[in-house]
Length: 197
Image (tube, rainbow, N blue to C red; front, top):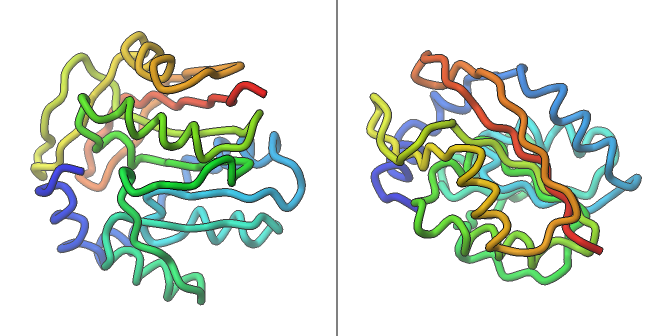
């Protein structure tokens, strides 16, 4: 994780937690619809816990995590349960989850490290497990106006990077736009992948 980016979220945890983004509702519903009832889900980069709260409310077994201790604390307050601080590189589970939800967090992983992180996620998924992630689209990495690092991938680069991380039985990339914490609209890539059986 880029240290300046992590420090941004640590310093702005309360402000970030106060923002509700409802535009991903359709994607959450589609993700949950492909999972078995009561499925085990790992959420990476849970922020203030809004997505975990929704998944827990409909009966899923969710492990919410965030790389920022301050945001994990905000999520703990919201969810009424402990939320772990977990950096992506520290994920060590093997075939433990039916699904991994990583909304707007892996986009901060430095490009040279993304394949390794994706391989850890692939390893943590059960066979035929589902994995959702979203990225800000681009052609080369850089920083936004808030000095946060983004890997800004193209769909082609993402496909190659996912392929190098593990074997997927399906991988779909959709495009869209989202208004971020900086109030700027950004082109997004929404990735749904399924681990091979």
